[in-house]
Image (cartoon, rainbow, N blue to C red):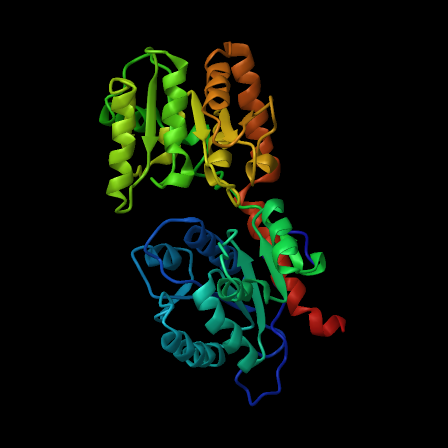
Length: 407
């Protein structure tokens, strides 16, 4: 790599002699990201938008193929191009047909790098990249369950990239241990916070007050929040049990996240709240569209996941706004929380330990809270910014573009 800034980290496309269907040397690279859909705002979709924007900003061309969705307009806003293909399907016949569809797209658009972010479309993308002689990269976003050899083989496509991006050191270790991928092919690139969006100076008091009124929060009551979709492994039940053990009535506890159709689990949470007589303290709220304002309302942000988080976006977003965090002591949180300085870690599934950690944060005096906020903000700005994530990803793109030249 020959540049010092993000704007020149993408190298020119390689010269090809395959009948003119690829880019010629001397122009910036074209990157195609492949994922199932753009119907949700999860880490896969957000990461694709952010990297597409970085490619465009660097002078390259960013394409994304998916089955579409409401967030496609975010891609267009950053200057990327979207191509609609049925990549959400796991039907083997559709997956096979997508190989040809992607191969044509790659050839027609002069794609240099194919970057797969999910398993089903990765199978199509892998064979399409092989067919057209283009570079293939993957991002490993989770641990992916593998109860049998067939599922293990299905997951393995995410290790077939010339470079495999792991979103945390925890995931990198998982890839090495479970799939035997050599460390030389793995690149750890932590997910990053958009520091323009998660900046205390850019969140107006009006936004915070409006959300507080919408949620009917009691003035002056400390707020403890667990954000995350309503699914059992996110630990909402452990959180409610921990709040019951606090035996405090002067706080407001928020469970914020969509049930995504899991109405049965939501009813279980409501029943647990009633069982502990916490109806006046714990509120289960739907998805929030203004999470920066939500974090600014809180005194403690909790991540109580019982299974290891591959990374844990909530933990870094809260720290970016100077909020103390309590997370479970496994997975990505071990890499993002500085114990005793930006937050605390509790054993997974341990309601007593979680309760004690929350109580400790609630008891912090103002000077200690201020020091923690300063340390948390510095931690994220130095190590977990969106800019850093994008720059490191472009370095990987540049690395594979130079593989042939180096050999």
